[in-house]
Length: 208
Ligand SMILES: Nc1nc2c(ncn2[C@@H]2O[C@H](COP(=O)(O)OP(=O)(O)O)[C@@H](O)[C@H]2O)c(=O)[nH]1
Ligand SMILES: [Mg+2]
Image 1 (tube, rainbow, N blue to C red):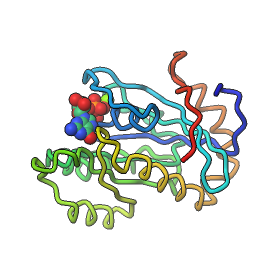
Image 2: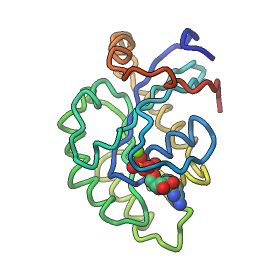
Image 3: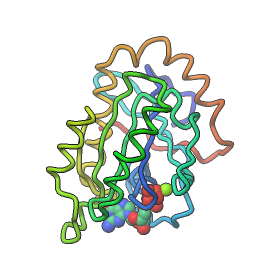
């Protein structure tokens, strides 16, 4: 499906969290349905996926860091206009969990431009259950405290990956302020900001 396809809304979703938690893999497992073992320096920048949910045709632009998160230097343009933010940690590395509250949640508060932006906490790599150090209960408590959605998943086995995006998007669709005229201006801005690339759009035309 090409870039001219009709859609009702364009949503900007982005992923944050420490380096190595699986953000890029998570995006690819959602947009291309395969597991990529990525070099840590390679990010996907931005992927597009079309879905139909809640009776609406949606164009999802899913932003990834290009590895700058290692230096904690994501700029505010990365956050600007996002309707959904996915905060990812690795259930086998505790510091990736504590850094979400110590660092990343503060970054969101600082830079996020949509006050009602929906946040989702994601504990990734549950396929490595024997190495788990962060319990599901801790994730639930964090999510309750920060007022965000929560899920645990594996970008490798794809467990819960689609459900995560589906829940996030459904919640955005239920939030009128995220659907208002801002979306049409976003529609222009988002592609102005786009890093130059031709392979950004995943060709898949998928609905759940
Ligand atoms: N076992 C397992 N490995 C994963 C999972 N997700 C990502 N990885 C691996 O973790 C490493 C870092 O992933 P990457 O997507 O580059 O993390 P990013 O720095 O957050 O973008 C890579 O070697 C991935 O193959 C997962 O769910 N399970
Ligand atoms: Mg990455």
